[in-house]
Image 1 (cartoon, helix red, strand yellow):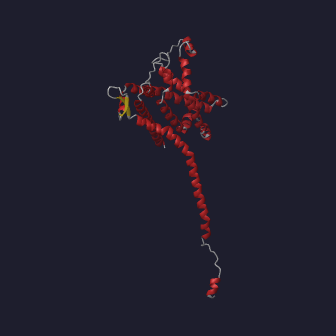
Image 2 (cartoon, rainbow, N blue to C red):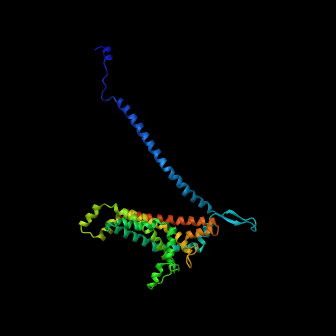
Image 3 (cartoon, rainbow, N blue to C red):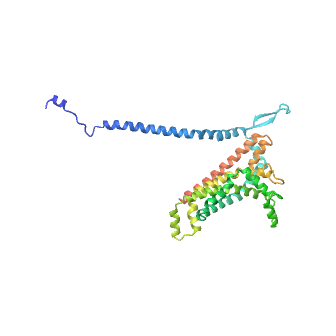
Length: 331
């Protein structure tokens, strides 16, 4: 065979010729890159309003409160020039921590938490378990009945209960007196139970809905297997259901602790009642409110607010840490 015939011989593409594969991969890579770019663009477009609102409603106020807490107003000279704002460093924090009224407010919160958290958590769990196990036809009715008080604003709820606590106006007080039960809801001994009752009435149904939704997600085959093995209702509730909704229990506990530290509306409205033992500095939040709008000391109010936020963050960290350790120990 001559060299010319060899040159004219057509080349048959073999299996090692990868040119078509390369041309086929290029559009796929470009399509994948364009899909990723569109996904990131869509995610950025959806998250931008959230981060903008979070910055405006959370980051900026917190930063401004920190900045405001470092300044105070002092009279210059003989006081003829009016007050002037001066840098005070941590002076406002020292003033708040040194004030007995501010420290007593945390003791009030401690007593409130001792009564409120067990009643709230225990009552919500018991009601959620009852809804999950029985009363099948009346579940919707009881869910609505329990959640309805949460739909009422806290201010309106406090006003309603003040009416129910006021002697010579309340049918509840009249019925108690007719039964020989005398109790002053506005006294120093009755103020804390009165506020706990208002908070329970408003928030119990909300937590019941959370627990009930978590219980509905429990695998029913586990409950049926436990029933076949001879486990009773109490054993199923405390050995199967509650461990499986542990994350919901921790979440409600955190929210309840943070909400307890923010106690403000109920005691503020109750302080307007005749003969109430609630003062303007009864809780730390009321102390900050009084410093800002009654004494016009915005630096002290900002410092008190920052201290309350730090206490809430510390308690949240401790609760989360303890629950994570228990989870690791069980696993």
